[in-house]
Image (tube, rainbow, N blue to C red):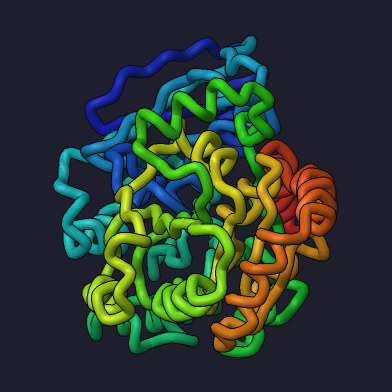
Length: 418
């Protein structure tokens, strides 16, 4: 029985006597304060993980009872998961609740205060048996079992990319949470290894559950649809695409160097599209565009809405992802699912995501990237091979499977099996 609760919420409940007993026995809460619904860079990454986790839990655990805490700017709906082809329905004895905060959770300090001080009180008042904290940190004083998803440890590996207080908060509270949680979920084997390396977490305390890819990410067969999309977005016929938050960890300045080297010998004029919202410490990226004389060659469309992402991937000739570090890396997976050849960094979790379905390169070698651009532009056989491999690789990842594996973690923790 999946429950979505709100502080000022509406409650839809149908309970049988048996279901009421289960409700008390297996009441689970999810801290979804970082679920963002406004368009912007915060809608990427962890927010999409939370959104898909909650949406697919309805089908993965029909006997469960979930309370989901959302921010003052978010609200959940019992609509079908996009592209899943399955409606989310309320079954016999199920109750759906969401608890929406009245506090301004967009303020990080308010959110931290709520998470550490007020959330434990809510958990006790609601008789919660287990709290899932899906982004690294759980309350220090937690009056129930705790499961924490660790999405990445970039603040440990690239501390210079974070502001001082942000870095301190992440390091201190993620370390404490990793030690105190009953079980940890890592979204890749790479992240699991980082947990052991930095925080000394034992392997048996970690379960790896890969994120998935929606069915909406698939090749577009109708060329007129792509032609209309290019016209509407004023896109060139040929371009390389990057999608992600504009921040130092994405290694985009190296990508610009590689692209500039490619243009010097290219037979065709491929543009470079860097799609994504502005994150932090991004000014040097725009300065690099000017320094390399690429103002007329590089396109910044800003944040790309999820409902348009499949069209962007399909319209691109090659998807490029030079990131220095990723906890998982959804964009290259989505690009492969759309039948677009991928070039990605040979680092962190990206080899797990891409496998042998793309070209994996050293993130510090712009000459290698420039050469790879040329190869994919000139070698039709290689492009076709990567497309076929990418489509097959993408089928290995499923949000539904991720939710099922997460539910199994909950059950193991509640029964003492984890």
